Structure formats: structure tokens, C-alpha cells
Image 1 (spheres, chains in turn red, brown):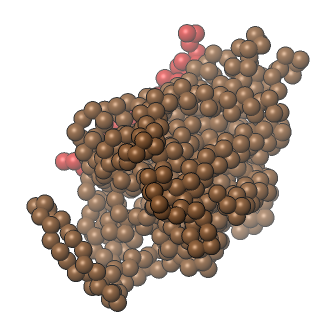
Image 2 (cartoon, chains in turn purple, red; image 1 turned 60 degrees about the vertical axis):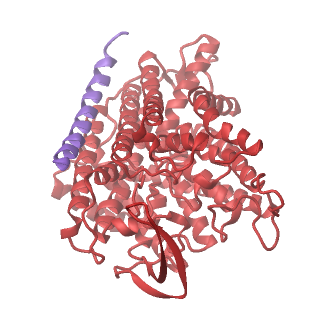
Image 3 (cartoon, one colour; image 1 turned 135 degrees about the vertical axis):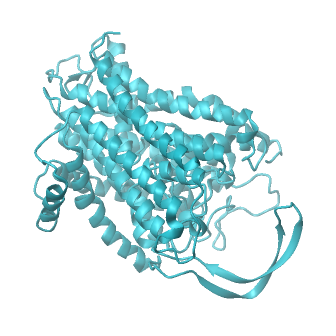
Length: 32
Length: 590
């Protein structure tokens, strides 16, 4: 059970990273 | 402090200076895909790798694709390491029959080695099989270092290029870094270590009969104390030399043995100690020259090097002074250096290295994001222990980790030229590129992620039992142990105030999250900045352009680093090591 949680956490962490890349790219075209 | 000690420190810095240009030049040639003397041997292997993996070596990537490729590569590598740790009992090269690593520790270790942190909440020689050490941990020592280096190269390309959105090809850069830079040096370097007495074998551990049996008191799981007589000693060994060289050259820091470079099988002689120090600084120092060379301003590269060298000397001098003056509470004990003793505070230090080499190693390993240790930072005097802590808090930009030091310094450079621009009322420029609001926002995101991670997790840990349970010393020293754990994790350093018991579910998971945030959530905005800079035009220099090549720039850069670090972390330092020092002066120890 813990194995599943940790593997899922790993995948989620890197998915969050990819979303962060997209957010930074979107911010580039935005005037704040 | 002794003349001999100072001589060793200055000779080390001189040798670092001498290797900076050749290393930087070689790195430039490798990543510019120019001819090198290794091409006849390595180019066929490189072509084969691309053919097998279907990589088009001519195709370049935007910053987003480059960064996502890096994230996917790291994510898959981390999952594989987790699985190796969790199944090592059934895998080969496990002569001691170690069980599978428990899930929390396996997760923490996987994150730690993927992020180049190498924080070790376990005793390697009693936890990890040879296969886990070689195929799991040493593999990550290579690839996490390569990832750091190629990201720095991508950032340098962003500064150097104009009117493009391409920063290179992640797979090509990583392959060339592994083949041309890391593997050749590690093959030669591991043989140098073997010549000094570092072991390299796949044998099971040796059991020796003690000539003088020892009687020890052991506390059992029920809390009762019993007396045992120890008649045997188990001498751990394994493929150490091959792991030792990349441990330093890749600024990884994860030791084959628990005591790391204090172990005579990892670091047997003063020469091996010097060689380890040199390996740690070789690439980070060389990259400053690469920065200058690739951007067409070698003087800028040297100005950055000078800022790093200044901060290194200040930190080393402070650490050496603090440890050499000894412990004032040991009244009546002779702590002066002499022909028969090192003098100073020798608790937690190896006699064969003494005060100067221990202080130098601690400064180097925390200036860089290495984390290898040849002495125990937890046993330093309060002010001596504060220096490694500050080094990491400053973002490990004093030469820094392989690649990470340079791209971390890039953030401070952007902030420094931004401040300079504000002072003279002009749009800030950096090597002909205008620094605009998007760049400064990204720079601040990179700075804030470290602050948020370190102070946030430390605050949680000090107010709840799950955090304070790991403390082994009360008072300000305990606070320092906790802060150091998160500073080291978020800074991807990996050294520890080793008194803390970090092998708990709380510390294993939160330090892992801190490491992942500190590595990837810092590099993403930096890569965004690099992508943005690459797309800009070059603005011709004018009378109002702030020069980034002279002493004024170096001074401003050093000031920016110190001010950002001091404003962020001074409260934590004042409640930890500074308070401990004041209380020690008043006669109270922790």
C-alpha cells in the first residue's frame, strides 16, 4: 500500500513540475 | 591557526584557479560540439546511443521541451531507484543478504539521489546491497550531476544566443556530458583513489577477531541496559573507489560508508583528501570560464569567479578561526596546536586531517552542493557550525554544485544588475540583453522557493512532536539540527548536523519534498528566464550600461548574495547557532 502511495507521489511531483513549466511559459505572455 | 594550515588553504585555491581555464575550455568544446582529443574513442559510442534511442542530434529544443525532457528523465530514474531499493533482497550482488529498504526510507533516498542531494538517513554499509549502491545510487550520482551541468549550459546558451527560442537538445547534452566529461575523469580518478588505499571489490565483509575485546553497555528495545563483550569487528568494504570519485566530481556527497570521507576506506590520506576537494570544485569553477567563453566575455566569467573565490575565502577563514580557537568551556585543557596535537576543537574530526583540512573540507562541501564530509558538522563549535549552514543558505553559489552553482549564481546576477539599473534609473542590461519584469519575477520565484521550503518545513518540525522527536541535543542546538536538515535538503547539499535522527516517516517524506522543490521548482523559473533571454536582441553597450566585468560588479554581486541570505535567514541563525554561542560563552553547553 505504502509503495503505491510513494510511487503515485513521485509521479504527481513530476506532473506538478510539468504544470509549473506551462505556468511559467503562460506568464511570459501576460502583463502583470 | 597555523601557517601550515593557511598554506594548505591557499595552495588549494591556487590549484583551483589553475584548473579553471582548462576545465572550462574543455566543457565549452564538448557542449559546442567542437573537436576534442576524446572524439576518436567516444564519437562512435555517441552515434550508437543516438541510433539505438532514436535521437536526432541536430534537433534543438525550446526551454519548455528541454525542461520537460529533464523532468521526465528524472521522474523515471527516481521511480526505478525506488523499485531497486524495494526489491534488493531478491536481486543479485547482495552478499550480506540485506532486506528490502523500507518504503519511507526508499522514497526519501530516491528523491535524495535524483536531486543530487544525497541526504542519507540510513547507514549505507548495513542497509544497501552492492547492486543498490552501484546500479541505483552511483547511477544517480552520474546522471543527476549530468542534469545539473547541462541545465547550466542551457542557461549559458540562453544568455549567449539572440533571436532564437532554442537552447540545445537535452538528450544530446546529457549524453555528451556523461561520455566526455564524467566517465573519463571517473575512470582515471577511481584508479588514483585505489592507489591511495581506497578499496574496490565485491567481496562480502571481513570479520576480524579483536586483540582487545571491548565491554559495552547496550540499551534494548524494552529500554533496559545490559552489558555485552564485543570480541569481533565486521569490516565493511565493497566497490568504494568507483563511487568515491563521482561522489565528489558530481558534487553528490553520498558516502559508501556512514561516516563518509572520514572513513579510511573512502579518504585514506592527505593526498586523497586534497584530490577529493579538487574534484568537488573542478567543474563548478570551470563553468565560470565556460560562461565567459560562450558569452564572449571572458572577463565576466572571471568577475563571477572572483565573487565566488572571495566568499569562499571569507567562509573558510571564519570556519578555521572558530574551530582552531577550541572550546572555551574546556578550562585547563591545552588546546594549542603543537607538534604532538592539532589543537582547537577536535571533537568529530579525524586526527589525520586536523583542524585546517577539516575546516577547508566543510567549507568546500557546503559552498558546493556536495555534502560529503570528512568531519562531523554537528560537533563543530556554534560559530563554526554556522558557517556551513550559511554557505548552503546563500544558495550554494560559491562555486556551487555542478551546474547548480552557476545557474543559482545567474539568479543573483540578474538581481544584481536589476538593483544596479534601479540605482541609475535605466533599464537593467546583462551582456547586451535587457532584463525586464518577467526575468526578475522568475528570479524571485527561484529565490522564494528555497525560503518557503526551508522555513516552512522547519517551522512545522519545531512545533510538533514528529519533528522534535528527532532532536538529540536540546535548546538552540536542536533548532539548528532541524534547520540544517531542511537547509541541506532544499539546497540539495546532503550534509547533516548528524546528531538528528532523520530516519522517520516525517523526516523521510518532508526532506524528500524539500529536495524535489529545491531542485526542480528552482530550475524551472531559471530555465524560463534563459528561454526568454535567448529570444531577445542584443542591445549595443552605451555609457549607461552597467559593466559586468570589473571589481564594481563583483562587489555588487557579493553584496546582493549576502543581503538576500541575511534578510531571509538571520532570525533562524540568531535563535540557533548565535544564541548557542552566546550561551556557551556564559558557561552553558547543549
